[in-house]
Image 1 (tube, rainbow, N blue to C red):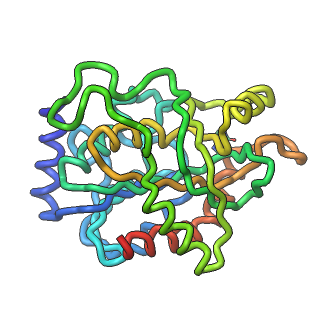
Image 2: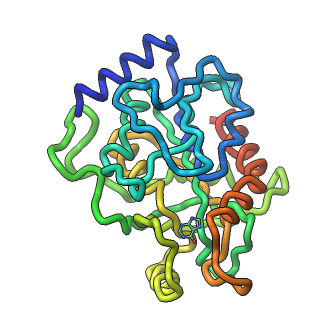
Length: 269
Ligand code: HPA
């Protein structure tokens, strides 16, 4: 694994000559932020050694290097999901590559269902903590001592300083925001009403099928993390079940707010 990671990081360094400091993962329908990056290099996942190629509809699968908010960023337009059949170590592989390339802060975004009854479709939720409901953990197996410790500490997984800066930026720009706990599970099924209820009882405010594995690996490697859930649907909709199309549509609509927040936060880092 270490050898593959070094091979990929070496390839990207050689190909781009780029030294990223901020990593960004763009979720379902949230790829618009990529338009704000002053792109210096764009690589399709299929051209990157040891990368899988993303399959889910609406994810274009590009690695983008460039400047955003005055900083060197490396962005994933489309991520790998566990439900696509990739093991968690493949899902999180790009995050470890980012770490080897020098990324010290990770920004993640996801489309998520709103569990908190105060939430509305289109809300941005600043993630203050998460619950891992995946059937596993990406760090299971021999520890990669070069990257981080055997038993990573998780008390401040989402950087409190970035969270408070983000709240100020949102308020200054009149962007409505929520703060809460994200629960990540495998998918690909959306939750049954009983499962939505269970997640609420567990203390979660938003639910989705990503983010947790990536953030675990990032924290293992000592990266600071900041995450946003875009609430694309409510857990118990009055107007019938949630569709993937609706998730995509709502994600795109909320993308502009999230883009502003990420960009300003990166500028102020
Ligand atoms: N559940 C799980 N994942 C999701 C949802 C949801 O309601 N909405 C968007 N991604």
